[in-house]
Length: 239
Image (tube, rainbow, N blue to C red; front, side, top):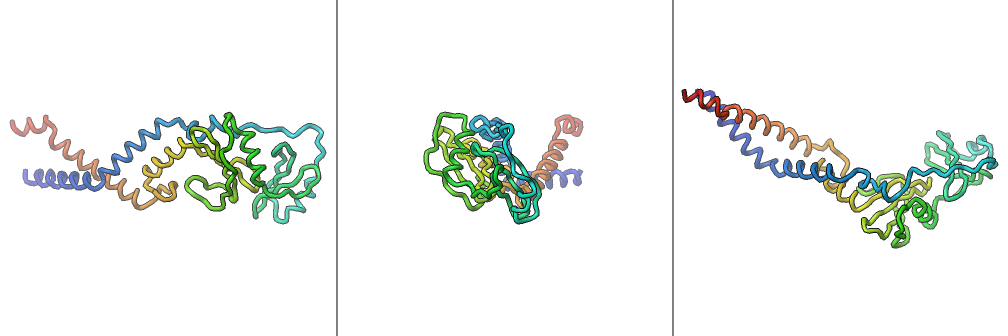
């Protein structure tokens, strides 16, 4: 009987203090999980606003430069050669160990990086709404929780109600990210959920591990208390 009381007392203390220490984070986990599950992932990604799946085909019988010439001009070991349309122009995208370079697919001439004006045209061509960019594109040179794609890039902000920003990589001219107000709300709760308040991407932190282990112990202590306080067991003990 004394042993049972010691176990009951120890489980009660563990359960009480752990609930006080990590109870707030447990509430944040539950609340953030509920909110994120309610937000449609397509809306979070902005797929209803920007068409990134549409592919413009290269016109038939378009004269193309020899691939060997492009490989020679790349200036580094070539990993891939992609022929595609960019801003109404047939281009060759050369991927090397040093990055991405663009060439005119007809002549083989090297093309400059995508500038602000061209980035704005690319973003507006993919934009599904009637809203226009509310300001000139801004150049992005460092990573942030909002954008972790290829650098440098151009940020084109639209004047829609969801405060959408489209990020176009300067090297390739590809739309690498679409960020909306819904995405930012989701990302905020995601950072609370994984306990990475700075970069919003690392879910292997010691904070998360410690609270997760504490939650497990809290659940085990609660289970012990539930078993020991079960009405049927107490009734039998009285008898």
